[in-house]
Image (cartoon, rainbow, N blue to C red; front, side, top):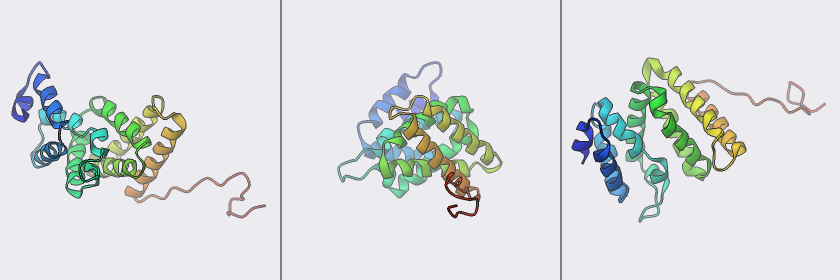
Amino acid sequence: MYYLARRERGTTRALQELCDLVATSGRLRRRLLDRLARSALSPAELRIVLPTCDPVALIASHDNSRALVEESGVQNSVITCWGAVLDTLSHGEWQPYAERWMHTATDAGHRGELLLDLAVSAADRCGDKRGTAFAALYASARSAERTAPGGAARAAAITEQLLHKISAAQGLALHDTPSPMESPRGTTP
């Protein structure tokens, strides 16, 4: 199916079949991610990456009660694959997938934090497009706030968490704004 989906033109039937097949097994998803991460990733393969990196499937518990996102090999594959997507495809092509990523992170607890870490690590690999990739990820998170199933406030917290991770990856320190009860030096009046 992978080879058919890679060569498919004018239809997405083989890609859909591949996605349906991978959805049946964490092992198959892991193997496909590994294969994709080891290749040069043509534009056709990048379009396979997007549905294969489905965040809901990545955070789902499997037989050993671990999620794929908790496996270092899968993390490396996802970072490599998403890095190629961010570096190569247009923002419009991957934004709906990034918004799903942010929606999933909103309700996934520590696994949601892992999703954010992977997204930031992927953008960090974009070389001279790194800043643009970080900005586009942040814009996608802000856009996802409007349609977040858990509500805009929870989604805004995820966006803020993403911004902190992006800032840390860039070596920047974000300082929290002092509350109205604090002076600029951090002491209460």
